Length: 600
Image (cartoon, rainbow, N blue to C red; front, top):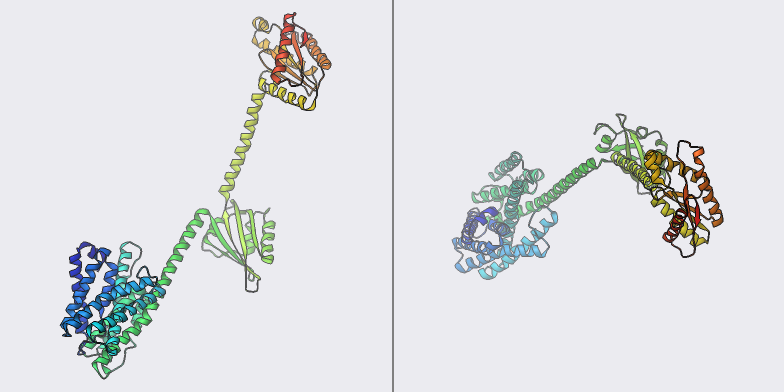
């Protein structure tokens, strides 16, 4: 029975299939009941009905319930209990799975499975409630309102649900997991376990002289331990079928009792007791297996993450001074994973000699005082490679509050340190190149003095200081007379020599704190900060005279003269205004004959 079967067929086909399966299960139960008319030890249809409703899609639930009712009616009418009782029993049988599943949902079981002890307990309660309710319904509608009838119905319905619902659903769920590749099954081992259970059951139930009913529990428990709920459910199913066959053929230890009715009841109680022992055990084992698989998976993920991030974990036991390493710790240190962890002293020796004292002190402080420890250091690997590591740890305490161990992680950050070093080098290079670029932008490449942008910036700064502090500020605009004629007659190389010589003479005649910059081809701006006009005139005149006389020191140069215009800063005067006034004074000096200085 798989979900695929229900999906392939229409509602009518699902109805016919369910009616046939339920009827066959009921007729087999009646046939195996022996000579006790109207009394069976197990009603497997109850478990088949629950499994069918769980597996079938919601759209076929009504058809499945109708099939259950018809299959039950066919069985009940065959035992000649009357049509009224047969219809009442059939309605009770059809309501059993509905009641069980509804009670399970009310108890918080959203998914019917048998892999958690709590789920098993709640499902068992739901089955017993549905069996009790259906017993009452059957007694009312069937007219069999006696304690013996109620107990018989409750016992057979409970056993049918608790044996065959786990068996069918577990087989189906395991099949689906195997099909999806989520789980594998050792079929050979399972077959051996079930074969052993069948052999022991055959030996126990084929004879009637010895009370050996305790023996089948052994293969059942073995199958449960080896294969969980699947093995336990299948083994209990084998015991149930074997006991039913023994009742049908008047063999087995059950017949040591005095009547057939007592035999059937005793068989039911026997199976119920076995289920009580096996189902919780199987659920506990399944839960443990699931938890183990989850822990194994998480451990695998942690190892993969640790390996990818190059993180290892370590632990130092204080009392024994012993060290425990993960495989990643061995890899980080260049050792073979799985080797014996080194001693604490050997581990310390792997650190760079400049870091050993600091690392030892930090770990010893944590061992004595508790708390946490953190440090960055260098280690020497087995191959002699230097690696950078980042270590973090914290103390573990015993019940008396004493430090018993230190647990921590160690990460190989060599690549990160290398990247940081490269970034730092790139930053230094970028800053150096930025300084060079700034210097090139602020320096005239021919004369080595300030460029036009730089000297105008210095003028703006000097103007702000003069306004803020009330100090003097004088500027001078200087131009070489007839510079174009010099270039035309002597060539541009000589013109460049003239420019450099003029700058040298002007700089030597100025104060060291004053600034000079080239603002055009042969024009220069001089910023005479905190200098009054009288002194500025003397500096300008000294510059003019030195340049006029420099051919005596540089006979290779033609005769050179300059014209200079001075301007004094006044309150509320902007740098541009001050420059234009000085430039106007320069042109006045040129109009008046050149080789002279004029004050605006």
